[in-house]
Image (cartoon, rainbow, N blue to C red; front, side, top):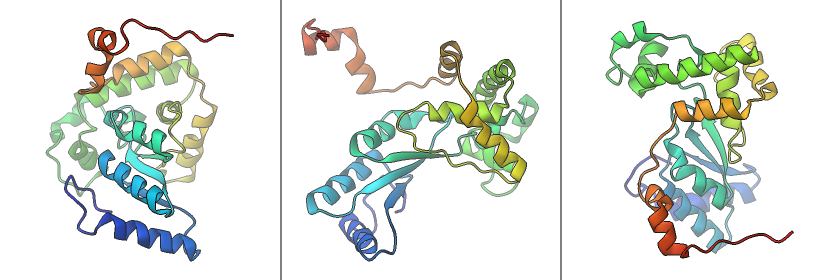
Length: 230
């Protein structure tokens, strides 16, 4: 399905029906969706549920310490509607491996062409930026503390989110694949997790920040708390 803020060129019920036909015919086992607004995915999942069609079971999105905006709506939606999150580019276009420095910013963040070197692509995607490098520095610090590689720490962080099923690694060599798989052995201390989260924090925006305000919660709950009885 094409990523668009507008309605899909193909009606979503036709897409869902076709996917259901493929599942019933044994051509595919499951269906997933990639890079689509949360409202559209939720709509499609509701249609599939109401009509008894095969549901979407996976959501593929960009997710890393550099790109966390999916935490606003896409990831919560996936958790609520039964889709496993499969992050692509968990290493932030390679920036979180620590291979870039401020000297690489001369390429012009956000102005690079979409073709060319990996450095061009990282800059064009917005990952290679002052913010991205600052986050990468924290990743490198924690990797040194743990005796791990920055890539392992960055991938391990994505796995801390209970909505994540498995990140997609972009290893080019067997050595890189083996290094990435080493993320499974990384154990981050609470203080290290906090440092990573603080360095990469995003603003959730409305309505999330509004609903978290003390005044809003007072209006909603009137100071009432619910205590669990053991």
